[in-house]
Image 1 (cartoon, rainbow, N blue to C red):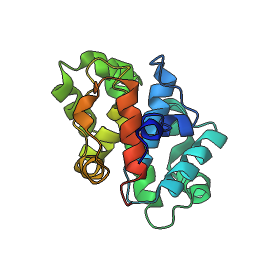
Image 2: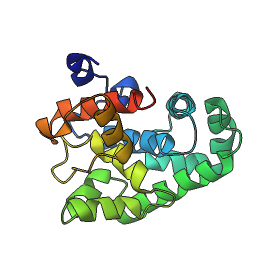
Image 3: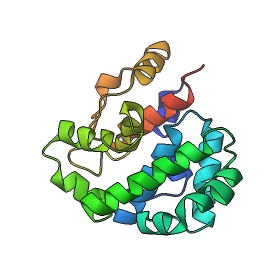
Image 4: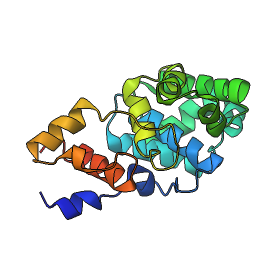
Length: 193
């Protein structure tokens, strides 16, 4: 594996045209939505198509998603994305998380970050969202490492395993760097090789 290729891997947020570099509230929420989709038990292709369906229907803020309601999320949004088995469950999860975000953090994930005492508290606050677990938290936070001060999740075991298989020393990188996030994204894509 060419280390230069790995270090220049496209971030998943970039693949979805989400620019996290400024830490803008809208971009951070869009990445959270995408991360919830990536964290589900579906293929990456379905997650990407479903995110694009949210985008096509202009449902990229917590308020717009709540206003759209459950039925609209199930059909057409989830249907367009390719969900067939978990569309109701994922729609309910996204709605509940948007309501929680609106109720507890004024609809702003940056407010959640500001309220967190440290990295562990940040992860705990995200993990408290309905249906969000350690994998989804990791997906979300790993690309925010260079942007959010308190974002520094340990790499997932699957990433560590892929790094070992491909003889990549993760410890040589500054974990808060964009390069490290790119290496992680590249290893995720190569985890089955």
